[in-house]
Image (cartoon, rainbow, N blue to C red):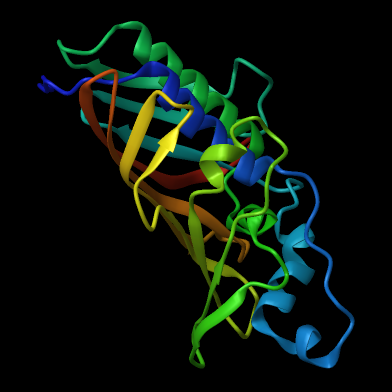
Length: 244
Protein backbone atom coordinates (compact mmCIF):
# COMPACT_ATOMS: atom_id res chain seq x y z
CA UNK A 1 0.00 0.00 0.00
CA UNK A 2 1.15 3.57 -0.74
CA UNK A 3 1.01 6.08 2.11
CA UNK A 4 1.33 9.86 1.98
CA UNK A 5 -0.08 12.96 3.69
CA UNK A 6 0.50 15.36 0.85
CA UNK A 7 -2.27 17.78 -0.16
CA UNK A 8 -3.09 18.02 -3.88
CA UNK A 9 -5.07 20.73 -5.75
CA UNK A 10 -6.77 18.77 -8.56
CA UNK A 11 -7.08 21.73 -10.90
CA UNK A 12 -3.31 22.27 -10.93
CA UNK A 13 -2.63 18.67 -11.93
CA UNK A 14 -5.07 18.97 -14.80
CA UNK A 15 -3.11 22.03 -15.99
CA UNK A 16 0.19 20.11 -15.90
CA UNK A 17 -1.34 17.09 -17.64
CA UNK A 18 -2.77 19.29 -20.37
CA UNK A 19 0.55 21.02 -20.97
CA UNK A 20 2.46 17.73 -21.26
CA UNK A 21 -0.04 16.48 -23.85
CA UNK A 22 -0.11 19.76 -25.77
CA UNK A 23 3.67 19.82 -26.10
CA UNK A 24 3.52 16.54 -28.00
CA UNK A 25 0.27 17.24 -29.83
CA UNK A 26 0.88 20.77 -31.13
CA UNK A 27 0.44 20.87 -34.87
CA UNK A 28 3.23 21.80 -37.22
CA UNK A 29 7.01 21.92 -37.00
CA UNK A 30 8.87 25.27 -36.85
CA UNK A 31 10.06 26.42 -40.26
CA UNK A 32 13.77 27.01 -40.83
CA UNK A 33 15.55 30.00 -42.24
CA UNK A 34 17.15 29.12 -45.55
CA UNK A 35 20.78 29.75 -44.75
CA UNK A 36 23.73 27.39 -44.80
CA UNK A 37 24.32 27.44 -41.02
CA UNK A 38 20.71 26.52 -40.27
CA UNK A 39 20.62 23.76 -42.86
CA UNK A 40 23.69 22.04 -41.41
CA UNK A 41 22.94 22.50 -37.70
CA UNK A 42 21.82 19.50 -35.60
CA UNK A 43 18.60 21.32 -34.70
CA UNK A 44 17.84 22.01 -38.36
CA UNK A 45 18.46 18.35 -39.15
CA UNK A 46 16.13 17.30 -36.30
CA UNK A 47 13.36 19.69 -37.32
CA UNK A 48 13.71 18.72 -40.96
CA UNK A 49 13.21 15.01 -40.23
CA UNK A 50 10.63 15.36 -37.43
CA UNK A 51 7.62 14.77 -39.67
CA UNK A 52 9.14 11.52 -40.97
CA UNK A 53 10.13 10.28 -37.53
CA UNK A 54 6.73 11.20 -36.09
CA UNK A 55 4.84 9.08 -38.62
CA UNK A 56 2.34 6.69 -37.06
CA UNK A 57 2.43 4.33 -40.04
CA UNK A 58 4.24 1.84 -37.83
CA UNK A 59 3.73 1.68 -34.09
CA UNK A 60 4.16 -0.73 -31.20
CA UNK A 61 2.35 -2.10 -28.20
CA UNK A 62 3.93 -1.02 -24.93
CA UNK A 63 4.10 -2.05 -21.31
CA UNK A 64 3.48 1.13 -19.30
CA UNK A 65 4.41 1.53 -15.64
CA UNK A 66 3.18 4.73 -13.96
CA UNK A 67 3.90 5.73 -10.39
CA UNK A 68 3.26 8.93 -8.44
CA UNK A 69 3.41 9.43 -4.69
CA UNK A 70 -0.16 8.16 -4.33
CA UNK A 71 -1.02 6.17 -7.45
CA UNK A 72 0.39 3.21 -9.35
CA UNK A 73 -0.83 1.97 -12.72
CA UNK A 74 0.49 -0.92 -14.80
CA UNK A 75 -0.99 -1.30 -18.25
CA UNK A 76 -0.48 -2.45 -21.82
CA UNK A 77 -0.94 0.30 -24.40
CA UNK A 78 -1.79 0.16 -28.10
CA UNK A 79 -1.61 3.74 -29.49
CA UNK A 80 -3.27 2.69 -32.76
CA UNK A 81 -6.36 1.17 -31.17
CA UNK A 82 -9.71 2.97 -31.12
CA UNK A 83 -10.65 5.56 -28.49
CA UNK A 84 -11.41 3.86 -25.20
CA UNK A 85 -9.60 0.67 -26.26
CA UNK A 86 -5.96 1.76 -26.13
CA UNK A 87 -5.35 0.69 -22.52
CA UNK A 88 -5.53 -2.67 -20.86
CA UNK A 89 -5.11 -2.00 -17.15
CA UNK A 90 -3.14 -4.83 -15.56
CA UNK A 91 -3.04 -3.45 -12.03
CA UNK A 92 -3.62 -0.21 -10.14
CA UNK A 93 -3.23 1.07 -6.60
CA UNK A 94 -4.40 4.22 -4.82
CA UNK A 95 -3.11 5.49 -1.48
CA UNK A 96 -5.58 5.78 1.39
CA UNK A 97 -5.02 9.54 1.47
CA UNK A 98 -5.89 10.01 -2.21
CA UNK A 99 -9.33 10.54 -3.70
CA UNK A 100 -10.48 7.48 -5.63
CA UNK A 101 -11.55 9.58 -8.62
CA UNK A 102 -7.95 10.77 -9.03
CA UNK A 103 -7.16 7.35 -10.50
CA UNK A 104 -9.79 7.93 -13.20
CA UNK A 105 -8.11 11.23 -14.07
CA UNK A 106 -4.68 9.57 -14.35
CA UNK A 107 -6.04 6.80 -16.58
CA UNK A 108 -7.78 9.39 -18.78
CA UNK A 109 -4.47 11.30 -19.10
CA UNK A 110 -2.65 8.08 -20.06
CA UNK A 111 -5.31 7.32 -22.68
CA UNK A 112 -5.02 10.82 -24.11
CA UNK A 113 -1.23 10.58 -24.28
CA UNK A 114 -1.42 7.15 -25.93
CA UNK A 115 -3.60 8.58 -28.68
CA UNK A 116 -0.69 10.83 -29.71
CA UNK A 117 1.95 8.12 -29.59
CA UNK A 118 5.29 8.29 -27.78
CA UNK A 119 7.76 9.34 -30.48
CA UNK A 120 10.33 11.80 -29.16
CA UNK A 121 10.38 13.68 -32.46
CA UNK A 122 6.95 15.08 -31.46
CA UNK A 123 8.64 17.01 -28.65
CA UNK A 124 10.32 19.18 -31.28
CA UNK A 125 6.97 20.85 -31.87
CA UNK A 126 7.65 22.98 -28.78
CA UNK A 127 11.22 23.89 -29.84
CA UNK A 128 11.75 27.08 -31.90
CA UNK A 129 14.17 27.04 -34.83
CA UNK A 130 16.26 29.76 -33.14
CA UNK A 131 16.94 27.79 -29.93
CA UNK A 132 20.34 28.58 -28.38
CA UNK A 133 23.12 26.01 -28.65
CA UNK A 134 24.47 25.27 -25.16
CA UNK A 135 27.03 22.61 -26.02
CA UNK A 136 28.00 20.23 -28.80
CA UNK A 137 30.18 17.16 -29.09
CA UNK A 138 30.42 14.53 -31.81
CA UNK A 139 27.72 12.57 -29.99
CA UNK A 140 25.30 15.20 -28.68
CA UNK A 141 24.14 18.78 -29.27
CA UNK A 142 22.13 20.45 -26.50
CA UNK A 143 19.91 23.49 -27.04
CA UNK A 144 18.09 25.79 -24.63
CA UNK A 145 14.80 27.44 -25.58
CA UNK A 146 11.61 29.15 -24.49
CA UNK A 147 8.80 26.69 -25.36
CA UNK A 148 6.58 27.65 -28.28
CA UNK A 149 3.09 28.62 -27.01
CA UNK A 150 0.51 25.93 -27.70
CA UNK A 151 -2.44 28.28 -28.08
CA UNK A 152 -4.09 26.70 -25.05
CA UNK A 153 -5.34 28.67 -22.06
CA UNK A 154 -2.63 27.03 -19.93
CA UNK A 155 0.17 28.81 -21.79
CA UNK A 156 0.54 31.04 -18.71
CA UNK A 157 2.10 28.01 -16.97
CA UNK A 158 4.30 27.15 -19.92
CA UNK A 159 5.68 30.68 -20.22
CA UNK A 160 7.40 30.26 -16.84
CA UNK A 161 9.45 27.29 -18.05
CA UNK A 162 12.77 26.92 -19.85
CA UNK A 163 13.44 23.94 -22.09
CA UNK A 164 16.49 21.90 -23.08
CA UNK A 165 16.65 19.35 -25.87
CA UNK A 166 19.59 17.07 -26.72
CA UNK A 167 19.97 15.88 -30.30
CA UNK A 168 22.21 13.39 -32.05
CA UNK A 169 24.08 15.68 -34.51
CA UNK A 170 24.60 12.84 -36.99
CA UNK A 171 21.01 11.62 -37.27
CA UNK A 172 18.88 14.44 -35.84
CA UNK A 173 17.07 12.17 -33.38
CA UNK A 174 16.01 13.55 -30.01
CA UNK A 175 17.87 11.84 -27.17
CA UNK A 176 16.43 13.75 -24.21
CA UNK A 177 14.07 16.61 -23.40
CA UNK A 178 13.73 18.77 -20.30
CA UNK A 179 11.45 21.52 -19.00
CA UNK A 180 12.16 23.34 -15.74
CA UNK A 181 11.08 26.39 -13.80
CA UNK A 182 14.21 28.51 -13.21
CA UNK A 183 12.47 30.37 -10.38
CA UNK A 184 9.22 30.17 -8.34
CA UNK A 185 6.07 31.53 -9.98
CA UNK A 186 2.35 31.92 -9.39
CA UNK A 187 -0.24 29.98 -11.35
CA UNK A 188 -3.76 31.38 -11.86
CA UNK A 189 -3.54 33.38 -8.60
CA UNK A 190 -4.31 30.30 -6.52
CA UNK A 191 -1.03 28.43 -6.46
CA UNK A 192 2.65 29.17 -6.03
CA UNK A 193 4.98 26.76 -7.78
CA UNK A 194 8.37 26.65 -6.07
CA UNK A 195 9.86 23.73 -8.04
CA UNK A 196 8.97 22.15 -11.37
CA UNK A 197 11.01 19.85 -13.59
CA UNK A 198 10.07 17.44 -16.35
CA UNK A 199 12.58 15.08 -17.97
CA UNK A 200 12.15 12.66 -20.86
CA UNK A 201 14.77 10.13 -21.99
CA UNK A 202 14.50 8.54 -25.44
CA UNK A 203 15.49 5.06 -26.58
CA UNK A 204 15.53 3.48 -30.06
CA UNK A 205 12.66 1.31 -31.23
CA UNK A 206 13.37 -1.66 -33.56
CA UNK A 207 12.66 0.53 -36.61
CA UNK A 208 15.26 3.12 -35.54
CA UNK A 209 12.90 5.83 -34.34
CA UNK A 210 13.25 7.01 -30.74
CA UNK A 211 10.42 6.75 -28.21
CA UNK A 212 9.95 8.35 -24.79
CA UNK A 213 11.07 5.42 -22.68
CA UNK A 214 11.40 7.29 -19.38
CA UNK A 215 9.39 10.27 -18.21
CA UNK A 216 9.90 11.94 -14.83
CA UNK A 217 8.17 14.97 -13.36
CA UNK A 218 8.62 16.73 -10.03
CA UNK A 219 6.42 19.55 -8.76
CA UNK A 220 6.31 21.34 -5.42
CA UNK A 221 4.39 24.37 -4.23
CA UNK A 222 1.44 25.61 -2.23
CA UNK A 223 -2.21 26.43 -2.83
CA UNK A 224 -5.04 27.48 -0.50
CA UNK A 225 -2.55 27.64 2.40
CA UNK A 226 -1.57 24.01 1.92
CA UNK A 227 1.72 22.61 0.64
CA UNK A 228 1.71 20.00 -2.10
CA UNK A 229 4.30 17.88 -3.84
CA UNK A 230 4.34 15.09 -6.37
CA UNK A 231 6.81 12.89 -8.19
CA UNK A 232 5.65 11.07 -11.32
CA UNK A 233 7.61 8.37 -13.12
CA UNK A 234 6.35 6.72 -16.32
CA UNK A 235 8.33 3.97 -18.04
CA UNK A 236 7.59 2.36 -21.39
CA UNK A 237 8.82 -0.98 -22.73
CA UNK A 238 8.08 -2.07 -26.29
CA UNK A 239 6.23 -5.38 -26.43
CA UNK A 240 5.50 -5.89 -30.14
CA UNK A 241 4.35 -4.18 -33.30
CA UNK A 242 0.80 -2.89 -32.99
CA UNK A 243 -1.75 -5.36 -34.33
CA UNK A 244 0.39 -8.45 -33.78
